[in-house]
Image 1 (cartoon, one colour):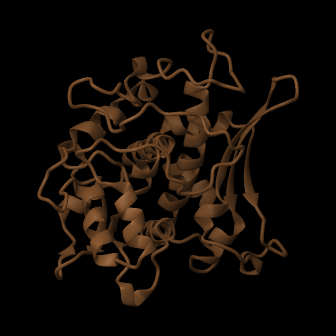
Image 2: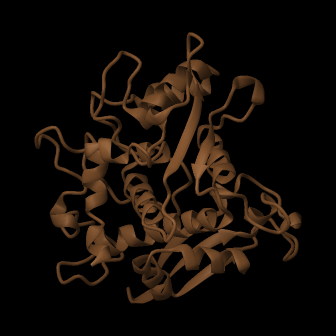
Amino acid sequence: MQDLTAAFNTAPDFFRNQLCNLTGVYIDRTGCTSYDPSSCTGPDPSDRLWGFRAFDSSGNSAGEFTGTWLGLWQKGVQGHAPVLSRFETRRLQALLNWSKPGDKPPAHELVQPDTVAMTVLAVLAHEAGHVFWYDVFVIKPDGSPNPGGPADFNQFCSGTFYQPVGVGQQGSWLLPPTVSDERWVSFGLPRNYHKADDVDMTKLGFDLDHGRFPDAGDLLHGIYSGQLPDGTNVQNGRWASALAAFSTDEDFVETFQLFVLMHARTPLQHSRVKIFGSKGRTYFGDFDDIPYTFSQKPELVRKSTCFNYLLL
């Protein structure tokens, strides 16, 4: 409870209001045999965090919820959640299924502020972001919820968050987003395709599946920095994180999470990733620090600007 209170206290006012408007915030005990975090077993906590917008059989709202996992609190010190650098490192390695020390997995090695409160705020912002995605896109023309879809991507930010294909050089995705047919969408499930000038996620998946970790590191550096292995510069990177590059909904949610953290009472200033690439390269500099280089990333800035109305 102490960590949740600290996260709420460091949250910006607009996100405090969003949290207060949720029906409930749960601490999920799936995989746990008691209320003690040490009793929890299972995958990385990222796979046990969720956001959910519920409806009854008549299509009426049954509430909006987020869930953290009790096991998150076994990853920190003295009953606390882990600090943000440790949480983001575990989340990134779980996303890529890349955790063997000998394979030099990527890690967040410079995060500021690196606190437990920022970790829990990040978790809450991410899962509330999934609910928010449905609230702004999966609605009827009158603004009421549309539980069965389809989505209307013109209902938020004048339809420009997902910039239509062919409009100048803006936009991050080759195809328009779609609403998943699944009730629950698994963590890190790839959906949609990048534009041809960006990181090839199919190749990233192939490299990871076949243990070609240095090559995967080059592509991961491309996601964070925009510096592709062939020397191409993609607007200094279009993405709020590696997870954002996996699917259109995670692009929205991770951009929202970054927006919340960068507007916290003590704003996120650094989140630098150390990445090992091919030919002996080690990437560990400003290019791979998205908050620090945020203003130099025009596509990410454009998407983040869509959330500015929350501050009004």
